[in-house]
Length: 116
Length: 117
Image 1 (cartoon, rainbow over the protein chains, first blue to last red):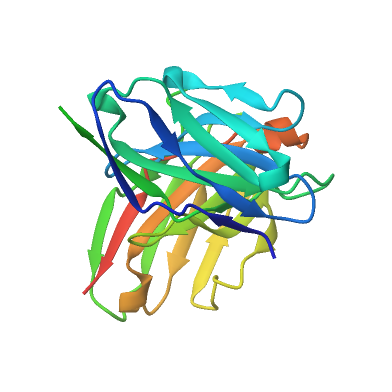
Image 2 (cartoon, each protein chain N blue to C red; image 1 turned 135 degrees about the vertical axis):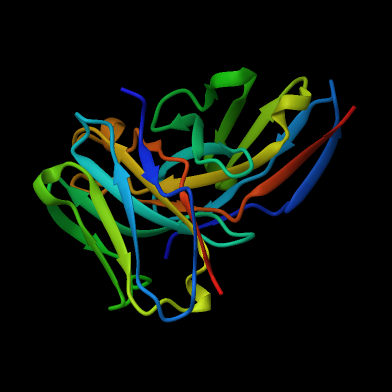
C-alpha cells in the first residue's frame, strides 16, 4: 500500500535560516509528488509538484523540492525562512496511472515554527 | 471565480444529530473530492465525483455518510447519527479534467470544522 512518511512532527527555525522538511514515500513506481501548506483554520495551498523530468522543482513562495528516486524522498527546502512561513506542511503522493481517480495520500504533516 | 467555497465554516452538534455540509467548487471543474482531516493528521480521502457521478468511496466513508453532487455542480456531505469520532475538518477540493496534470490540480476549500459534543 502507498504511504507517506514525514518524520518530523514539529520543527523550529530562526527567521532567515535555511529549512529542509523531509518526506519519504512508499510506492511500487514513481508516484506524482506534492507539497502543500496549511495555515491554521485554512485549506491547503499547493506549493509545488513533481510529475516527471527535472528532479529539482521550483514552487511558490521561494520553495523548492528535490526528488531522489534512490531514497524514495521528496524533501522540501527554502534557503531563507520568513516569519510568514510558519504553518503546517504536508507531503502527498498520487497514483501516476491512466484513469486514476486522482485522490492523494497525505503524510501526517510537519508543523513549522519560526523564531524571530 | 472566488475558488472553492464551503459552508458552514464551523458546526457544533450534539451526538446523534444529523449534519450536512455544502461545497461549491470552481464552476468549470468537473472533479470534486471530499477529504477528512483529524487533529494531528493529514487529510484522508473520503470520496470523489466526476461531474454528478460518485466514482470512488473510501472505506472511511461508513454507511452513516452520504455524499451527492446533483447536476455536477455543488456537493453535499451528510453525516447521520453523528459520533464524537466524526469531529474533524471536512475539506472539499475540485479540479479540472482527466489528464493527471489537471486531475491533480486541486483547489481546496477552507473546510468545515465539525465538533460533536
